Amino acid sequence: MSKVVLKSSYYGQPTSKWLRIVGDFLNYVSASAAVYSVVQDDKLLTVVFIIVGSLGKAITNAFTTTPE
Image 1 (cartoon, one colour):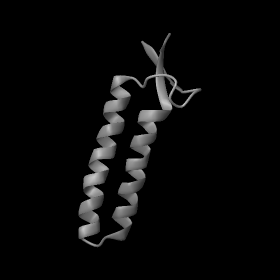
Image 2 (tube, helix red, strand yellow):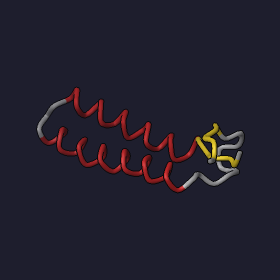
Image 3 (cartoon, rainbow, N blue to C red):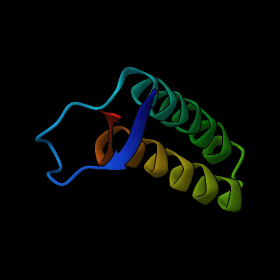
Image 4 (cartoon, one colour):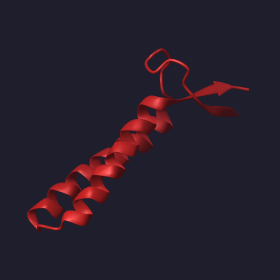
């Protein structure tokens, strides 16, 4: 079983596949939902979805897995 750790170098090590899937999913869903909320003129939802998308991007770049 591998352990999830914070990367010491931002781009030095590859992110594991499942973390990329989760992060990209959050990023894609929040981007499309943010567009919908902008069209509907709902500012609160727009901000929430932008924050969720940013978290998804951070997940894909900030963490890696290491074998135990």
